[in-house]
Amino acid sequence: MTFFEADHLAINFGGIRAVDDVSFAVNKGEVFTIIGPNGAGKTTIFNLVSRIYEPTAGRLVFEDRDITSVPPHRIAALGIARTFQNIELFEHASLLENLLLARHAHKRSGFFGEMLFLPYVRQMEVKHREAAERVIDFLDLQQYRDALIVNLPYGVRKVTELGRALCTAPKLLLLDEPSSGLTVEETEDMAFWIEDIKNLLGITVLMVEHDMKLVSAVSDRVLALNYGRPIAIGTPQEIQSHPEVVRAYLGG
Image 1 (spheres, helix red, strand yellow):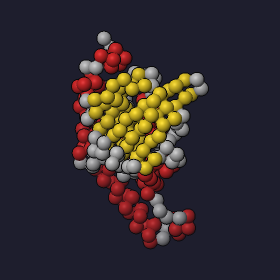
Image 2 (cartoon, rainbow, N blue to C red):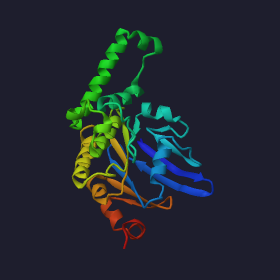
Image 3 (cartoon, rainbow, N blue to C red):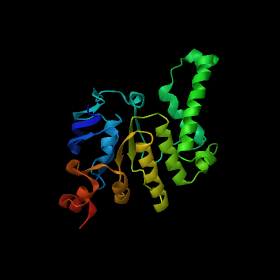
Image 4 (cartoon, rainbow, N blue to C red):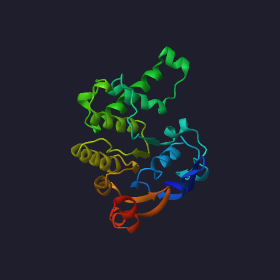
């Protein structure tokens, strides 16, 4: 069974072919990274996978299910979560409240049950809180639990967004440039989190990243794009020495 597959994926924006005939498969339990220069189509692929964009051609398959036409609000419930290159958190809510919002994908109660706060609703609230607290412990965010996002440093916000994605209990986690804006030390910490997410939580990771040191540290396989088309796929070492990748992305 193929865990996740993009099959001949393409999308046009007017007369521009932003993603052009891109195919790749992600195996369960691996970190698969997409690299490429700015404008190569990396984040566009993420927007296609998370169903923000409609593909012009091709299809998306997750756990042997065609999800090409699944509406965006159903993606998290299927087991796909993502972070964003630019942090998207509720700044005037606490860290804990931001994590609890992610549990909405697992809400099963109705309007009247919530309004009356029936016993089964209270039980579910306890389970949601326990799930959020486990993520807080996993990411060492205990000291920031009740702090407002607006008062937190950038690096902690970045980890909080990762935590919010984890709170949806994903099977496939999409990380859009997780090291963007981080210091060297924070990027090293992010590498540890990604390894632990894969090895300890058993979550498959699909990542877009510019930092080749982080890519080499955590990736099992890498896909290189240029002008919306794939130019190479292989291990991090194979990609870094590939002549077309060197010309298009790494320089030289």
